[in-house]
Amino acid sequence: MPLVATFNLRAFPAVRPLPFLTLNEPDLDTTFTDDGEPVRVIELIPSPEPNPLETILDEESAAETQRIAAQFDQYLGKERRLRRLFGLLHSGITRPKALARKLKLKVQAIASLRKRLARRLAGF
Image (tube, rainbow, N blue to C red; front, side):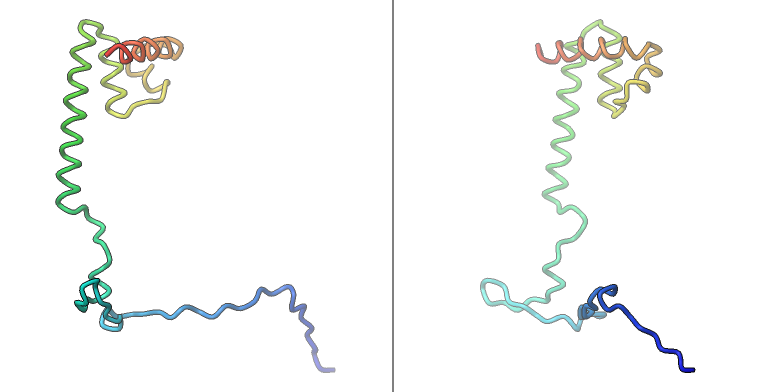
């Protein structure tokens, strides 16, 4: 007795054609810039590395952030806990449990200390 298989065609999604795959850079077409100059398509793809202008702007931004952080630290004066909390927050430690562990305080004390720091920051 022959084996006959029946398929429910609705159960299988439609098969899509595969996109054309280019394997080599020379296979890519050339294109033209606005002024009509031919250029390879590969040259139009931006580099993942930052360009020199982005690097300079990032360095200036980081320097400005450090300058403002130093001014705010001086503004806090002799409030040692607030200065330490600000330093931890500025270094990226933001979880209350981690802050409590570093400052050797309870989590509730961290919440009130953060509120005090926010009030001082508003007055800065």
